[in-house]
Amino acid sequence: MKKLFSFIVLTLFLHNYIQSQCFSIGADMSYANSVLEKGGIYRDSSGNITNPYAFFAQKGANMVRIRLWHTPENNIDICGNPISTNNLEDVVLAFKRAKIQGMKLNLSIHYGDYFNDHGNQKMPKAWIGLPPSLLLDSIYNYTYAVLKKLDTEGVTPDIVAIGNETTYGFINETAPTNGWIWPNDADKFNIALTAVDNFNRVNNYSIKKAVHFTDNTAGWLAGLFYSKNIKNFDIIGISFYPYFSDFDSLQQLGSLITELKTTYKKEIMIFETGTPWTNSAYADSYGNFMGNNGNFNYPITPQGQKDFLFDLANTVYNAGGTGILYWEPAWISSGMCDLWGQGSSYENVSFFDFQNGNRPLPAFDIFNFCSTLSLKEEKIYDNILIFPNPASNEIKIIGIQQDVAIKITDVLGRIVKNTFSKNNSVDINDIPVGGYTISLFIDDKIVSKKFIKI
Image 1 (cartoon, one colour):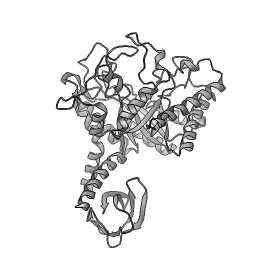
Image 2 (cartoon, rainbow, N blue to C red):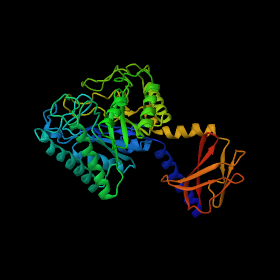
Image 3 (cartoon, helix red, strand yellow):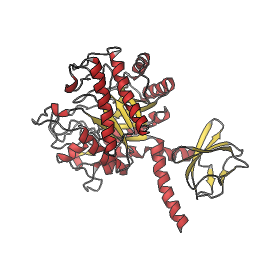
Image 4 (cartoon, rainbow, N blue to C red):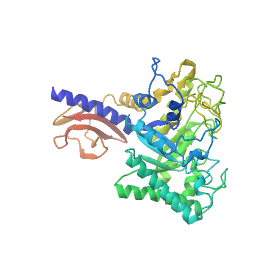
């Protein structure tokens, strides 16, 4: 009975591990707290009111992205009130709500008091007029202090992005951006990246550092950053919206990801994406800013939204990318006010059907991408089996005719055994009880199977 219970627990743990290790797939939920505070209601498919963080996690989202503004209270919303959304306290709350649901944490530091993007990179009001040396000190101290606060609150991020869509300048006094100024902008990036490094070193952490471009600029910006000695990062994040993209095929995006990964040896993730499911209905009077798919021919329907996301996920995964984050799928209509309107200018791109009481749309299935991928792989190699499973002393590889090189990794991705099968068998007496992946090197392919040691 004890072994049966251990098997069940390990099976569930292994399933969740496989899902998270296959691909980071999640959502930017930066507005969710404010939507809830201002009366927004999310429902499940049965019409029951649901917690959005819990619901996204239940559907399979394994990462949340939250943006941070320095002092958003310096802005007055359209309803006449100081904006507090996405200040540091709001980020702490969002991360706590996501972490308790098992999601990893991705922090986007805008280094401004409000939205910074490809056309605007205005610095916080508190930094305007500072001489270069004091500005660099402020960037360093702010970055370090943010990480320290999050750590103190128990929500240390897994990824921190230095800037948001920094395509033509960084931490400027003007809006719109005044373009790149070298070496000043390189100094700004590098001092922020150094702050993360030092925080990692002091605390023995391994927070990953990211830069963030758009699909139209990532190819040349990565090269520009390297030429200006901005290299100390782990991830290149890309925004890809069909509505804004110059691309006319997902193959172009796949080629970009492969090229960036091969050239710069960095992880490549889609930090933002979004596509509408309707352009003929509205939940409020706040005009929606995205009504079509640009050069892409996906229909503006719930199924079209879902089909795009699965095609995108397959493209990114096959090109070697490591994740996709959908921008603001929880930004439904509510009493929330921003700088330009009240409600949502994005409810037609969200994952909730405002025409059906904010019940979930089919797009939520994208968070199951890894499971569908695993099923496809199993169909290809369904003649190869690991037996018995669970196993205690030895496993046999059924369905291959020759002995092969194998690698066994644990649930943390650590290699616990490198060897060759012998008569299609592998001795596992020397590995502890737990869940494992065995990788079989067959000709030019790697076939991975899961097993449990009991």
